[in-house]
Length: 329
Image (cartoon, rainbow, N blue to C red; front, side):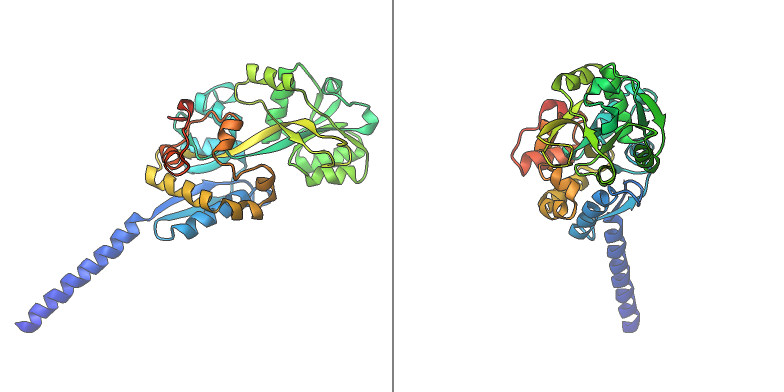
């Protein structure tokens, strides 16, 4: 009888122990975070913060980075919830959230922001031989266009809003590089502060890096709300840039579906905030784009997709800032 009692006690202990194990397992939240192609220089911009979050909350959050076709595709995947987090350009994010422009049939009111993101210039370049030194000079110029890319989408809208009509030649990034060198196109646009492809072109030929004007950004925002951004690029970023000048820019943020629990988003934002210095040190584009100003950039660059409640809680409780009403869902 005593042995039977001991056996029952052992069985109960085993059930409780296994139950605790299953309970701990059940508490683990697994999320898919969309990124870009693994061949893209922007892929680590998701991998590094995801690794920080996993390391900070090893028994609570497990993020898996998913290779995607890029920022525009991430918005489509977020709407289908095949990913629950993903980076995208903030103008496209706003168009998706509001269901406007090229997102009229892809309206996603469940989209939420995590932080202000980072800014990067989109350089508009021409060959020196073309003689084109102003945006107006692009009219009729053979111009490499990269359809499906964030920079291609934005520059097309920007030029259209300012009634500038190059002769677009549709091609990929690598083909654009070759076409500029061969002279089959005389203009192109490419994102990135000290972009390697533009440096490659400049090593073989003389180019112009075309400045923009503030009123051009205003015109774009009148026609395409939330899409016109600009940033000053410093003299010397390329040989062709002899003094600081205004450049068109895009701002990349990370978005999340509203279904992700508030406490999980709070922890995600907190982990990235507390490790932001190490993150930007590993990623020059984030460093140059001031990613560490995670909340300030949302105000400076007029983020329009509201924050997730978990992000709002972090910013207001920890940073002691007041989140503007338009950034509250």
